[in-house]
Amino acid sequence: MLVTENPCYRRALRVCASALVLVFVFGRVPAARAGITDAVKAVTLKNDLRVLVLENHKAPVATLNIFYKVGSRNEQISTTGISHLVEHLMFRGTKHLKPEEFSNIIQENGGMDNAFTTADYTDYFEVINKDHLDVPISLEAERMGDFDPQGFDSEKAVVIEERRMRTEDNPQDALSELTQAQAYLAHPYHWPVIGWMHDIQNLTLRDALTYHLIYYSPQNAIVVAVGDFDGDKVIKQISEAFGSIRNGPKPPPVTDVEPPQEGERRAVLKHAAELPAFTEGYHVPNYKSPDSYALEIASVVLAGGKSSRLYQELVMNKRMVVDVDASYDRLSFDPNLFWAAAQLRPGVKTPDVVSVLDKQIAALRDHPISDQELQKAKNQEQADFVYGQDSIFREAMMLGQYEMLGSYKTLDQYLDGIDKVTAADVQRVAKQYLVDSNRTIGVLVPTGMLRHPAQGPSGGAVHHVIAGEESR
Image 1 (cartoon, one colour):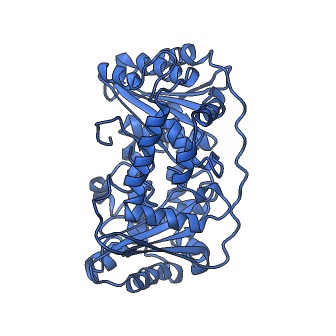
Image 2 (image 1 turned 180 degrees about the vertical axis):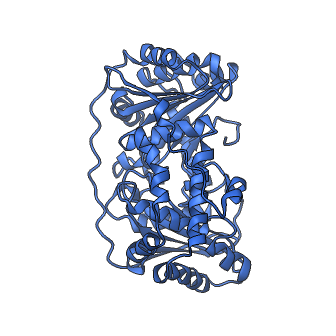
C-alpha cells in the first residue's frame, strides 16, 4: 500500500509533458476542439450501471477501470478508513476466488492490476492485451457481486502498519494530515483517506461487508473501457457480466458543508524529521465554479516547473528551500483547498520562507501576470491535457472522473475553459481566495532524526500494492 496524503498530489495522476511544453512556450497549443468524447459509446444497464467505452487503436492493449463513487468523504466518525480497508479486502477473495487469485489470473494473462482510494472515489483498474479484456471484465463483476474476503484481521493489520509507516513515520504526510484536519472542521475532508488509527483498529468484518453492500453496487459504479477493441463487442461483454448484479441499499448523500473560514488557523507538528517544512491551504471552490480554471493557472504560475515564480525565488535565487510546490484539484467532489508547501534547507527559519512565499502570493493579488507568463501557464495545462490522451489509462481516468462529476461530455470543455482565462481572472481569484483569513498554515518542527526513513513517496491517493511489489 502507498499512503500519499500530501496535498500536492494532483500531479501524481497527470502525465508529464514538460518536454513538449517547451515547444509551445511562446505560442498556443493546437486546440483539439473535436474532443475525445465524440467517439465514446455510453450505455446505462437496467441495474443502473453506467458503461463508457472508447476505441483507441494506437496499440494492441486495453484498460478497464471500475469507479465506485465512494471515498473517505462517505465515511462517518468512528469508521474512518473503511473505504481504504474495503479496497484492500477486494483483493482478498470472493465466493469463487481465493485471496490474491484475482491478481494472479490477471498476471497469468499478461496484464497488471491495481487500485487506489481517494477522498471522493475508489478506482480498480487493469491494463491487458486487447484479446484478454474479457478476463478482467468477468473478474471485476465477480468481486462486485460476490464479495467474500478472507483473512480480515491480517489485512487490517497490514493497513494499520501502512498507516504507521506511510503517515505517522512520514513527517510531511503527517503535517499535511494535521493541516487538513485544522482546515476542515465540519466536512468529512477533515479526516485522512487512510483513516484515524483508532478507527482502523476498531473496524470489523461486519462493517466492511455492510459498507460493500451499500457502496459497491451497480447504481454506484461506472465501468470505463478504453483500447484496441470493437466497442460494441466490449459493451456486450460488460452487459453480460454485470447485468444480473443486484443493487444494495441506495447510498446516503453527503450533505455536510464546511462553513466559511473567518480567520487564519495554524497548526504546529513536532515530529522526528531531518528538515523543517510548512504547508498552507486556502479554501477554494471546485469544478462547479468558473473560477476553477483561473485557480489552475494560478497554481502553475506559482509552481509549475523550474521557471515558475516560487521555484525561481525560493530554490534558485534565495536557496532557502529544497523543494516547493503549489497544487489545486478542481475535480474534487466538494470544495477543496489550494495548497502551497515547501521543505526548508538546513539552518533556514520557517517564518523567513513563509514571508517570501506570501510576498509571491501577494504579487498575484496586487499585479496582473504578464501576457507571456499567462500563455506559458495555459500551454502547460493544455499540453498536459492533450498529450495525456496518448495514454489509454489516462483517457479512461479522465472519462471516469468527469462522469462521476456529472457527465463525461464536460471533459471537452476543459481546453476552452483554460483558454478563456485572463490575467485579470488570475488576479481576481487571488484577491478573493488567497488571503490570510482564508488559510490554514501547518508548520513542521523537527525533533531529531527519523529512526528509519518514511516508506514510499509522498503525494497522491491511497493505493493498493500487491504484496512484494512496488507501487506502479
